[in-house]
Image (tube, rainbow, N blue to C red; front, side, top):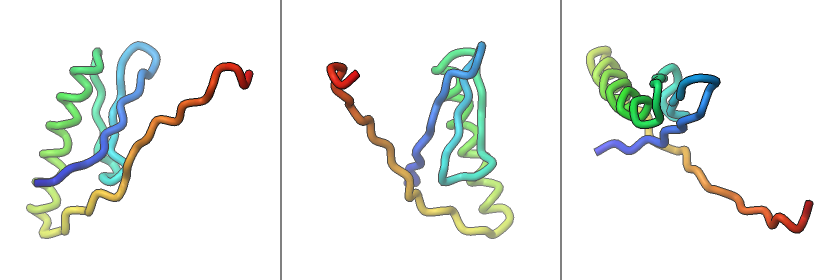
Length: 74
């Protein structure tokens, strides 16, 4: 099984998604859920393309973390 970090961002009137570990693999959607679904499909297609071209599947090295900042600091 492969696991890749996916970043989903609100972009004007839709959502965009990408994976830092899969350059060029992106997707969009009218909703967050649609962008997530489209990104899942884009990753599957991207991996299949790498396999078809006999290229290695990149190892996932990215991670995400939320940082909480106290409101009273501002």
